[in-house]
Image 1 (cartoon, rainbow, N blue to C red):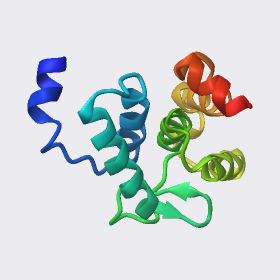
Image 2 (image 1 turned 45 degrees about the vertical axis):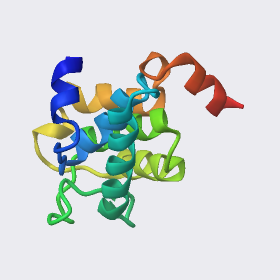
Image 3 (image 1 turned 180 degrees about the horizontal axis):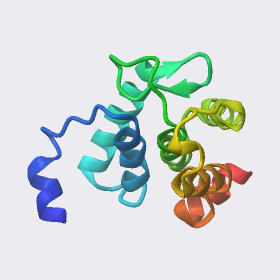
Length: 135
């Protein structure tokens, strides 16, 4: 895995919400690695542009109306791991407590599992990270 990351990290461009959220989450496990800091910064910059003031991150920057609860919950986990945009984490959790897409994702287990993880990331975030945030 390290070899793949080392070869591709500089050129890797992520444009979808879930991948942009998961990269800071993965990176927080390797804070000393150059690729981790690079992708943490890149992901946070793109996510900042994808924030919709109603309280969610759009699926892609050119699709401002498209949103999925489960992918936003994944972004939430990444933001909490990066200790970034925590006010947006609260806002997206509140938004998706009310929002219903009207499709199968309203009932899909992944949506509810990710909601729980967004609200209570627990062991998904390194112990030191969670303890520092709790203070």
